[in-house]
Image (cartoon, rainbow, N blue to C red; front, side, top):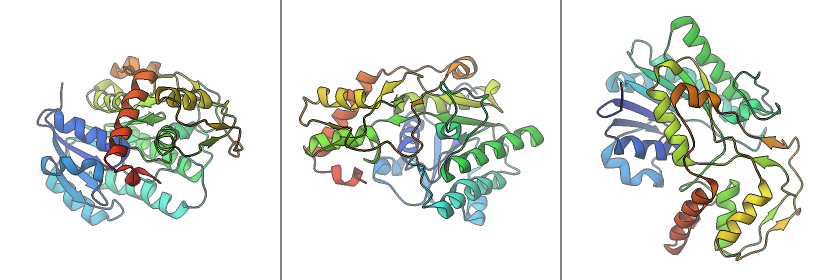
Length: 321
């Protein structure tokens, strides 16, 4: 399989941030897309007539199994789940239900289906407080219910590959940004504060992170699903370039003409804050031929342009959390 044209694909979490961009890319590439989502989302409204949309909760095993039998997917991109990068302990039941039970149900429902590839979406949070740059061979070190749930899913997928030969790949995308992202993440939060000319507080911002434009991450999902030699592997998807948080905030505001002054040092670091958080992407290059194409300046300009358009149309409130 060299491309996804007329291939039956299933995207779970199709209305999420990365999921919506992936779904749009798959439609553009001519794939026959089925989408699982708990409810319709604004970011895929323009795609509803181009995909088969199913309002399904992965915790409802019978619905999942019956629908998958009808779809007979050849490639599955599993992005559905509860995401919590704040390392909170407040939503454990929902995290376990969605990320553990939901993943198990989906894979169980695929028994008897002759699929070519299942992409499990892990997270860079699985590395926890390991030393950076993170490499796939490091032992996971989850530091939250969310990261622990994703480690479970990664190991469950690895077990199915080893024992049953299921064609599964786990991707660990690193911090991602771009259009359609909610304001509870650093980059959209900074942009939206600047557009509304609201005070923006942050910590001292000396901690480093890497930032990946969403189209690069989507490229990783597409390339992985077409790479037979990646089956059974865990692969980091990230550019591996680290930036100080405060430098990224300053860069965003500079591009926007400095409408506000950030209040650096106004907030404390989070408990257990990781000082350096970026990946080694050697494996992605070797196994799936992936590399980052969008540099930070270009990605930020594209993102700022999109949020500015939404602001002018009076639509920004729906992206605020």
